[in-house]
Image 1 (cartoon, rainbow, N blue to C red):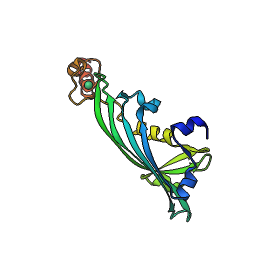
Image 2: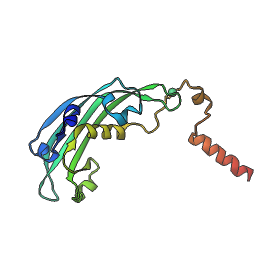
Image 3: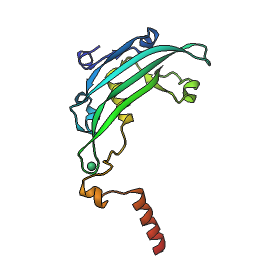
Image 4: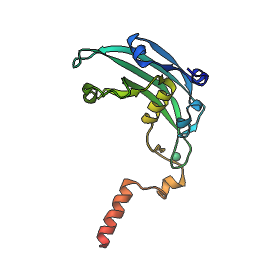
Length: 176
Ligand SMILES: [Zn+2]
């Protein structure tokens, strides 16, 4: 483990982590998650997380498959895409992952099971990178205040609402 990884968090062996039914938890400052930082109006937030591992008996393969449950909670301030001010947003992630060795085929049952996401693991699993990835996946794509104070938000300039697009489509049809 490099010193850099040691300071930021943990690189774990997810297969062992699951086989030994380990649990880790902690807190992470969002300021230390560089890709997440860009989506936030305020980076002074701390999220709490918990990772639980276990083995699950697979009906199909008859083997025990590794599982990781990742929980992440905390309040974030997202950046409104109209006015760029903060939007209070509660993050609550609870996801179950199945680590799969790189190059190994993803088990069929995983493809059928919506509750479990396969993650390919090459050597170790960087817990902080995993947290950041899962948080990014959970964020709304284009966060906006429901009632935005931005003049842009009020008159609709600079944005394409589906209704505006529909109206202009109808308009152009009529013109033809
Ligand atoms: Zn706004």
